[in-house]
Length: 63
Image (cartoon, rainbow, N blue to C red):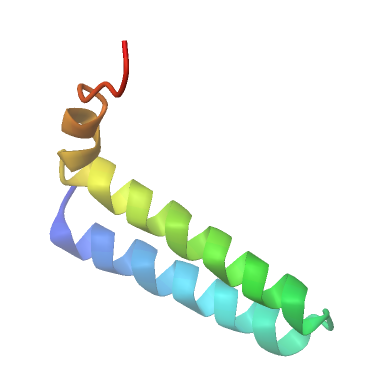
């Protein structure tokens, strides 16, 4: 994935999250949960884009 496309996706996700936070009336707790879910999803997506998430799937805990 080209770097420009990566930056554009991050900007679009940020703007969409900002629009939801500012223009959709929600309880503060729901907004914080939504923000956390989006941040975790973006971090996992970035890890998979850079190839770090696939190497983490080889680690097994327990049997």
